[in-house]
Image (cartoon, rainbow, N blue to C red):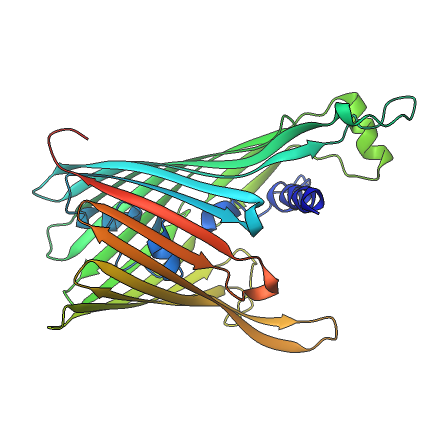
Length: 363
């Protein structure tokens, strides 16, 4: 069963991630970058663009980097997706450069991969014999490298930030793609209220795919009624995130955070129930309850969709997430449980992340 699941996922990645059409495809481009980083944010269903204040801001809203209080910070995350079939990993490190404007820069690496996929090209020999010793393994992996920067703008509570991202995607030795793009964000914090504006792929992000199959492999693909992929181009259109958050700290040592984010896209992926004919609208809401800045409970909901089943009946569905966090001073541990009762019955995923504040003259 695991073999067929991994093989199916690989085929889907080829079909959705690298279209064989000569024209540029603008849908389902770099989908691994829509997942997000940090268990803290996942526990709130990614509703953090107005409140994020750690190094994961490089992904969610680079303007939030200016809110980091430590001179330096590192963070790492591991997530097991689709019941353990795919692994999603994240590593980031950053440093403050100026206290006068709270400028902070970071480097981040994101990888999502399906490993140990059987390559059955040579399973059947020229004489028709089956030899499983000829079956090799390969990986289908996506990488993103982010260089991010954020700082205050000189107006109290207002900060700005941006990320330049380099993308590399590979499917074994058969195909690879390179891409480059920019994200930018603003954040305004008034104390209890904060607002965020995040633009992804603001100049569009272009991936150029190239494929290399030997004549023997092409013959096998043709004999098995498979399409031979050709060089192609993907274009990720700009997306906007509008966010608002409310924070409350009371005398009982509890603190509360509620945030709602609204994501707008125009790439034709209008599966959300609130989407229109030309614009995709994807809202989400997150909640965090903390005690004495030591322990946190988080919950979030999003992915609101109308699902039509095989009997043409429509049903309204959504996806909840939950999470926990422990703050041990310089060291934080976070956990999130996602895809709980999610749309289309996806398998639940466990996400763990760690972060460390570093004080001193060196990173």
